[in-house]
Image (cartoon, rainbow, N blue to C red; front, side, top):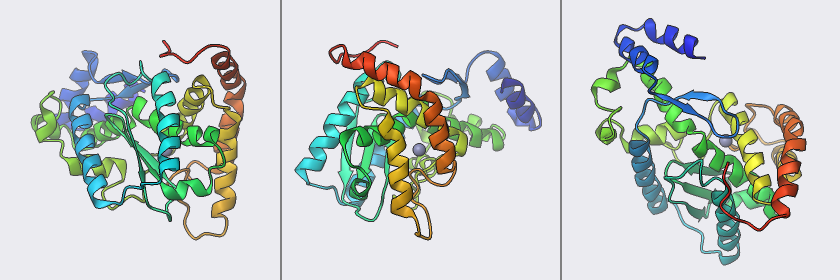
Length: 280
Ligand SMILES: [Zn+2]
């Protein structure tokens, strides 16, 4: 992946700064659980700051649910997952908010640990294990820093223009606006289109199923969520953003089945010991 990245950079002359940057060993991030080496040339601090701001805006512009039962379930499941992801996302200040959006079967998580769940999700969620599968997947996007990677890729395309703009510095918040961040999450046009590319979605499934298992939720329920979603959306014109058609449902189920022995082992292990902040 490195050679490909550097070749891509070398085509754009301002991007040479980047290749130097990468050769010096900066700008790479090892994704937890999968161990993949990912590009991260943006400031985590700036992304988290902008994500927190964007989340505050979303809370103002969209109705927050006061349903006590749903809020309590989301808090409890979310906190258990946050505990197992602790060492992967040590800078997160987790917050779980239920949005009253009944027509959206969806959820999302942003840098800094800001998680939104839409009430429409509960149409396909039959138990807390399934809720953990969805939240585990979303928390995995944050742990894998998928939005940072997306922003870093965008910067590559722009040939380092943002480097000059100061995006790489820890005070790069000036170049990285809340809107840039919202766009990267796919949230700039409302709450309906949170999704990453196929590779990142599959990686979030992989990390998510391990998180839910380590938190003591039955990983087999992750498969059921996709099945539920498939039947809930059969016949609908457009698929919901969460678990969208890329990758396809069978492709995701196959990957989960491949990971299941490992996930079941983690699940059994987590049930045999009291919940603690787990080391990796
Ligand atoms: Zn996703």
